[in-house]
Image (cartoon, rainbow, N blue to C red; front, side):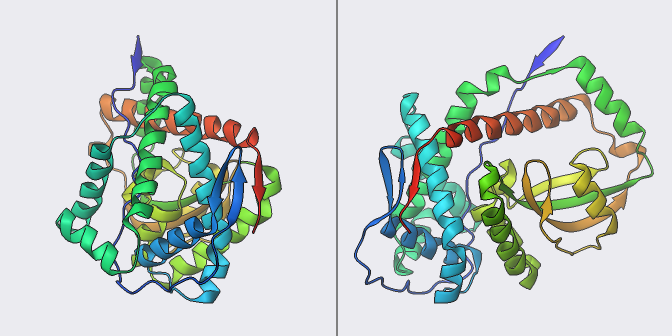
Length: 317
């Protein structure tokens, strides 16, 4: 029997309140940072997102760090523009109510009433509209994935049986509690740029493992970014071989160097390790959900890569 995926969580970039400071004023006149098809990303878009990310991730807001992270932030805004254009083409709309729910979710994750959270944003010299734009793009893309991809994702009983058998064969082996920051290499020509971005993020993450969730929320392109990069408990065979190999030699609390796989670069945080017991073997529904979410994420990544490869992108910075 074929089973359809019942639920797939949408990623929402959470805003982790670490510090509050006055955003530096920018004297540069606004201009075009990059052209994306028939739309533009402005210099002020880049600067406003930069200030938001510096605050939310704990990265020092200095000229040096802004220069280092500008290429990655421009790339993020280009990706969001492509996603919003596809949502517009499909007639997908995001209501103010949905954006406000996103703000409420983020405020709740920080244990702050939503109105206090909004006030904190503006007192910091940040623009609330910048965060709303980020939420709008995430919600819109989630709707695109739900309408265009999720109906095509199926998990059969045979898939579930095979995975349950594989898991039962791993009893006694190690299981790893993992978080990740993932950067996609959608185009081979971006290899060096993405690798440099991964190295910069790894260096920031290595300064303090406590900053890892905030960096993942803002920079990771994986489905679990909204949960701080949390992948849950993994064992051999549940992720790419390169990551399996790295985990076997890592110690608890260690952050890996960027790991290149067929899809991109992964920065891994090993949070805990334990031996698998018979009681840990997942039930059928949990296995179905996990397989389905993995397939959904893989197909969504391919869908986006096709959009980006066919887009006209011209950088002006």
